[in-house]
Image 1 (cartoon, rainbow, N blue to C red):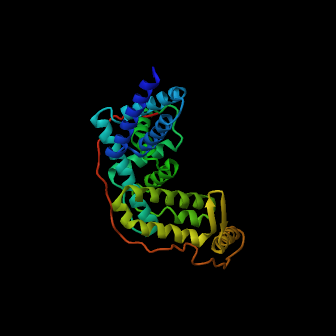
Image 2 (image 1 turned 120 degrees about the vertical axis):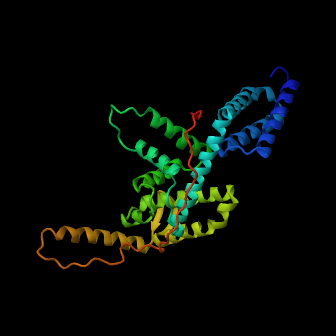
Image 3 (image 1 turned 180 degrees about the horizontal axis):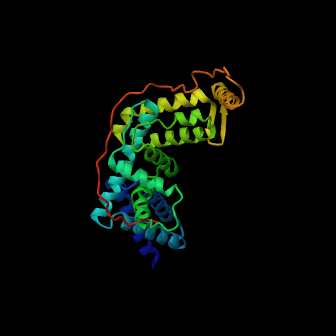
Length: 299
């Protein structure tokens, strides 16, 4: 930035760029956040009495946006594949949340199953002599990249994909096993994360918003059943039902061990230990199958 007048003109032009891209284009959630931050920084500089002092930060911000934009929109195939992957993963989450909280069984499409299997492979120890370059790149390009750009809880989504891979794409509720294991720490994490994901999807998709009440109601039912309060993954108080189920779990483990030492034991365990909150139905959801396209990585 050469002079104050020139600097002001450049900043004004950049603000116009940022505002147009934010309001006329449809950037990914991550790019939208970065554009908003850059816009705020430039608007602050415009009203500053010493704009030149902010010049390095402004230039860095502009360069980062330009680099981000270039990687997302390097060519048609890169952009289309990224946006399709984001759409597929959001549709997957839409269907998975309906399965877990509204009891609508979901069967993974071939495309989602391939993403799930690639993700599962990254979560397992591989033999040192295995060439995983292609698999790793597929995972980075089609799972990590779109999840980061969509700003969804990567850890939570990847765990859902791994569970799908373990079931070979078949329907299955991922919440009940956590309850059966009395893993309240994990249940707290999942309920909070799923609620956050659901809210983000509601904001992005009018179609998802139509069924969101069923999902949010289901999340609340689980939360109310097992937590007296739930503020964060590390700050919660179990409801009486949670304490009771933990007691039943200990009781079952003890009686199971007694069966090995006591002759013909007649110990009855509670019959409602599984206790799903909702009843299953049978429907199948599928998503389009795509061929692999070479994506340019952000990171």
